[in-house]
Length: 293
Image (cartoon, rainbow, N blue to C red):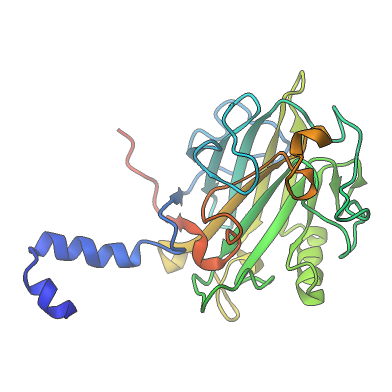
């Protein structure tokens, strides 16, 4: 049947359809492109010109809400940036957030887990104002599975007020999901402590938001096939990607939501299944700089 349909199509349309089958990673139709650029200084400051060679994107009103929909950019929004330097991929996030959990509010705990701030597998690494970065470097999935927790696919967390390296009160990276898997937990912790993933945040002057700068090393974090890590010698490459921005305010603002989360908005996917690999969008790592007009 496919052959019969193609016979009736014009050649340009056939080419477009064939390309559309190869230009995506996850199934969600949202794409980011990371082009070569300069290496940023990871200091939580988007210095003038530092991200001018990056691809810019915005959120989160058009993203997918897991909890209460975000409608006011002063409540929660972001400007994002992505690029690479041939060895690492870099993300910059300029986040507007009117209330910072644990800074403007007490560090209240959810009824669902009174150990939410434990830096163990019993804790909730994502409980707080946080970003989550999820990449499927292998660009493969079988059904509705989530990240494997290794270089082929992973889900890492940046929390504004707790971290593996700094402890409670210091923002930074934490082990993400599947944290119940000891092997995944150990892998994530090794990545953080060795520096193959690094991230730094600073609260904006005057508050009302913060900036995160995040670096991910190709090797060992982008494993495109067993034992093989992405290199620019492979050319342009598509990978699955998802990004989440989580927002806690005063506890009452999240009434009715899991953990009393105020917002949790996702770049791709659908509510309740946004961590499935096939629900993610596409990240293209490009090997040549775009033509600027």
